Length: 317
Ligand SMILES: [Mn+2]
Image 1: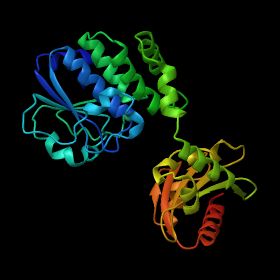
Image 2: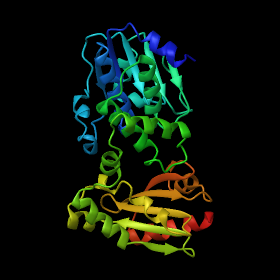
Image 3: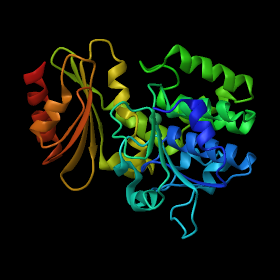
Image 4: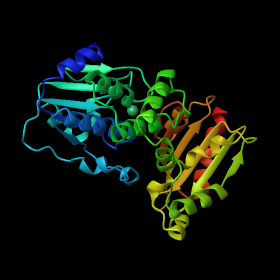
């Protein structure tokens, strides 16, 4: 694999670059791509960021997210660079466009990366933005408030604001440098992890008050029903993060979030504290995921859905 210096050298004489985010973009891919784009512009390189999905509203406070394009024009770019995409599938409908250029780069931090580009830079890190930071330093680009904030956004969102097991000493070192260069950590943390619309807060209150325990408190279930959406004016996407609540309760080994998603249709999310493989639990209902986080759909009456979940999780506890 190329060193950062070699990569910086290799990208040193380009005059244009297309930078690609992954579908359903998160703070890491958006922050890394827009920071790199901004750095290129300062180096006199014509640069545009592309993404095959709309940018979620919660990132709109960053002006750079408004410049992300959803379709590729015919004009040619010297290089195509994917940020935070572990496989080419993560490029969505822009996959074909990505491979239209023969100089492709894949900058990522998922060790499962399939190395689909001509040049692949996959480093173990809390966030892809750490690697983009290394690259910008190798370019000799001066970090200012704008670029630092974009990079810190990625680090914050990929590490759960420095609370997850993927925080390395290097992650904190980079974050420190970014704050020194002007990034507002407090503002970013508030925007990403605290601020919410009133409708979401009301829906969350309803979900929390629905909490029930089973199997000596090892299973906790929260529910969001159709009537709660109607009463609060909240939308289904606002339930993101609800599942984290049962997992904060002492003694809970499996957390389940039930969301009513139509007539006798329920979307189920599972979380495990480590003892139960919830991928297996979700598989019983035709779903799947990871050992510690999974999901499925179940049809039927709400009470029957709860009974099925309580019984099935009980088999694994
Ligand atoms: Mn990432």
